[in-house]
Amino acid sequence: MRGLSYLLKEGVRNVWNNRMMSLASIGVLVSCLIITGAAVLLSMNVTSVVESVGRENQITVFLNDDVKELEAVMEIGPKIRELDNISDCEFYSKDEAMNELRDELGSLFTELQGDDNPLPHAFHVTMVDLSQYDDTVKDITSVDGVYKVSDRSDVASKLTNLNELVTQIGLWLVIILGIISLFIISNSVRMTMYSRRFEISIMKSVGATDWFVRIPFIIEGVVLGLISGIISSIIIAFLYEGMIAAVQYIIPFSEIKYSEVAFRMSLAFVVMGMFVGALGAAISIGRYLKMEGGEILGW
Amino acid sequence: MLMIQFKNVSKTYPNGTHALNNVNINIGKGEFVFIVGASGAGKSTFLKLIMKEEQPTSGEITVNGINTTTMKRRKVPYLRRTMGIVFQDFRLIDKMTVFDNVAFAMRVIGARQSTVKKRVPYILGLVGLKDKAKCRPAELSGGEQQRVSLARALVNNPSLIIADEPTGNIDPEMSFEIIELLNEINKQGTTIIVVTHEHELVHKFKNRVIEISDGKVISDSGILSEKVEVPIEISQEDLAQIPEDIAEEISDVSAAELSEEALRALVQGEDEEE
Image 1 (cartoon, each protein chain N blue to C red):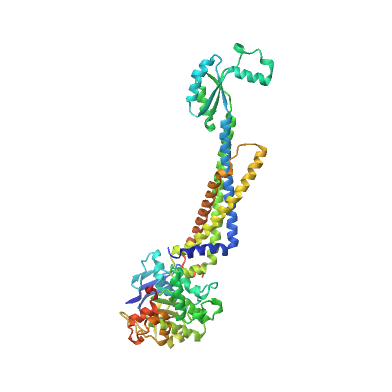
Image 2 (image 1 turned 180 degrees about the horizontal axis):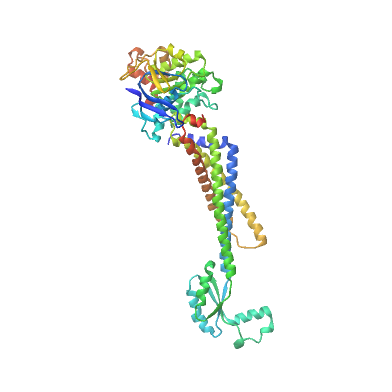
């Protein structure tokens, strides 16, 4: 389209001419993007922690007293491994259990060896997805020869709940802040339009199409979004490293490295910023386009 | 051929004002018409209906052979490109130079920069403001500002010029000059409609006068039905306005030998050549 470079220039000029309002829009949009980004990163980390807890924390499956070692390894083990949601299943004999107990508690248990060992044989089982903990435990319990499963459902369900909570709060934050950003950007563009209403009225009187009137303002919104997206990407990179370091000082956990998500995060910021900017601008322009001549000037 | 045709047009505003009441007006191509009447008589509504800034409540309006009553909204910009509008308050953009103000009208309809660079100085020459291209509107007199506004109206080569009280904000001598200029433009075939309440000014020129009062046409000095012949006269002054490069091309032909068509094309048809 001819005159596209003219329209681009006009759009960028709008941002500069209206810099106080632009600054306000960018400020609000940056805050929104950072909070959104923080919520997403927090959720990602919690998910990752839940996963690693799931990996690291095995559950112990105790077998009935009368189950012999051979039967356990040859029959019960394979049955457990066949179940859904099992990532690992390792035999843990009653001798190993006793040795471990003796190491921890001393010679008190020395006599309880061999046939006198009152402990049952067991398996150490790891699940793929901790949120399916209850179902998986039920499945394991129903296997012949299984006595009971050590209860860890508390930890699993707490972590899963936390993750859901973070996701929920994050989602609402994104929606609310998105609406606020939209409102602020549309106001900023409306201010520009008000200050340029005179030009708009002339444009319409000499036969500019609606799109020609619209594009510079949409570009203004998109530029505001782009700048906000870039600033947010930079700020969150620093903020994230700092926050992770602070949290790890209290509770060590395996965090997601920012470099792993940096590209996706920045891209999401920029795209979201530009989208909100364009939408905000489009909302404001509609009203002006319907007006004619003197109406635009408020006469 | 008719440029403007109002058939039984009435306009009532939402607030109940009856601005126009069953108006019939025909204006031929190439005519120069004054629309006079007291304020509130319906003159502005008449212009707004031509520009399609307003819709008639009833009746039918044809502009340049196109029925605008049923025209789609997205086609309106293209209708407006066929007309140039001059406002009482000039409506020039203060932060732009005279050149940019005129160029603005070309840029917003997507003209090429190279075309703008050629066309704007030419039009500024026509209205006698070639030297003021770099001035800001605020540095000019009222008459000069109105000529910039006129240059802007002319720059897209419209077949119709609408001037809404073009002399309302300028000195009487300057007013005369503006109407003279419009007359010159008219001689080159452009239809001109001037709305004014200055009867004195109207009497100085021998143009058709339509008087509107209370939303009705109460007098029309030249009711016209069919074809209008437009005499074309090219003065020495006009010839002097032709850009040098074109003037050179025709230097071996005397002005008198040129056909009307050719001259008209030369004077107002720069766009088509490019």
